[in-house]
Each structure stands twice: as structure tokens, then as C-alpha cells.
Image (cartoon, rainbow, N blue to C red; front, side):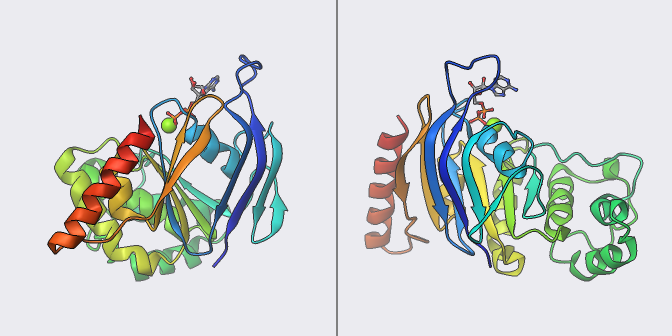
Amino acid sequence: MTGLTIENLSFAYEDRPDEPVFERLNLRVKPGEFLSILGPSGCGKSTLLNILSGILPGYDGRVLVGGEAVRGISSHFASMPQDDLLMPYRNILDNVCLYGTLHGKAKEYREKALRIIDIFGLAGYEYEYPAKLSGGMRQRAAFLRTALCPAEIMLLDEPFGALDVITRGDMQDWLLSVRKELDRTTILVTHDMDEALRLSDRVIVLKGRPAVFAGSFHPVGSAEDSKGRLAESALREELYDCLR
Ligand SMILES: Nc1ncnc2c1ncn2[C@@H]1O[C@H](COP(=O)(O)OP(=O)(O)O)[C@@H](O)[C@H]1O
Ligand SMILES: [Mg+2]
């Protein structure tokens, strides 16, 4: 698995050159790590992911994947946006294999998708259209489409943000249960503290303008005894203070 390094990243949107979103921001993500970036709306979380995925090329600094500098759209990152962006007139299998179809690898992708579709809870729905699926299922289809991309690092931008609270909890359970099988370095962006604590190896807080990483936290795992619960509540308090 592959790690990621961000070195001295500076970026401002063209219409606000004097208010940079980032100024000399640094970050290191370990190979295989599941990292959550937690921060208030507008702090720059999506901007950061868009820089990594190559959508926003006009930045200073360096992005290194596995020690190698990358810039622009690269095959190292697979992004999953908040909206599922499934095409209504394509069935689920065609939707999740879109990348393969565009790259002349339709057959290979279909075979792989059919092999792993069960993990995504979509077996039996291969030939249904998105309108027939629930919000959670559509989101898992978007996940499958992202996971089929041969990229080392997955970028998830508030993937459950549009789901109701019950479905969101189910999706978090599901993601926890398949994390091992996904087997990918992952950066999850969220403004939901509980989500970050539940899912991640490490949670970092992004805030301010220019935005900085204000704290780094290691979730304590499932708190089943009183000692564990105490550690968890201390961590939540510390994280909450850092976010404010
Ligand atoms: N396309 C854009 N043009 C100009 N400013 C933008 C653009 N997208 C986002 N911003 C601004 O950049 C800041 C960070 O936005 P964003 O990365 O979307 O935050 P987050 O994802 O943390 O909510 C905000 O102040 C936002 O208004
Ligand atoms: Mg955002």
C-alpha cells in the first residue's frame, strides 16, 4: 500500500487571492491508514481533496504519492463525491464499470464488479436502474465504482452527508466491516465528529483561514468497559475543544 505526503501546500481561489485557503500546509498519511479530516464547513476540506485529485491544479507546494511527486489528474487517487452521481439511464453494473468502459476495459471491470458486488450489498441488483435503489444502496454503488478504480488512495468527501441518520449509521457499520477488504489508504472528509471517531485510525482537525491542522487524535476503539468509555469521553472532549 502507498502513503501520501503533502509538502508546503499553498492555495488561493482566483477571486480571493489575498485570502489563501492554505499556506504551507503539511501532511503525511501512512500506507494503509484510514485518516479522517474533520473541520467546520468552509474550512477547505473539499478544496484539499480537489487539489489531490487534480481538479484544482493552481497550487504551490508538492504532493507525493509513495515518495513520487504528482501533479494534475493522476491515476493515484479515486474520488467519491457527496452526491452519488449515478447515471439514471444506466443499470448499476454499467454505472459502476463506467471508468473501465471509458478506458477500453469494460470486460475486465464487469468481471471484477460481479466478483465483489456482494461485499457492497448489491448482489441481485446488477441490472436494476438507480431509481429503484435506496439512498444507502446508491451510495454503496458509488463506493463500488470508486473501489473498482485501480488507485492506491481513496478520497471520500462527506460520502454519507446526504443520507438520513439511520441509513448513515448503517453505512458506517458497513464501511467498518469492509475496510479490510477495501485494503486502501483512505482519506475521509467530514464535519461529523462521531463519524470520524468511529471509522478512522486517526482524526485530524482542519480549521482557520489559512487553514491549519490544529490537532491529531487516535480513536480508542470500541468502549466496552468503563475504562474504555472514560477514555472515549476524554478524547471526545479534547476533540470538541480543538474544533471550537
Ligand atoms: N470554486 C470556488 N471559488 C471560490 N471560492 C471557493 C470555491 N470553492 C470553495 N471556495 C471557498 O473556499 C473555502 C473552502 O471551501 P471548501 O473547500 O468547499 O470547504 P469545506 O469543504 O471544508 O466545506 C470557502 O471559504 C469557500 O467559500
Ligand atoms: Mg466540502
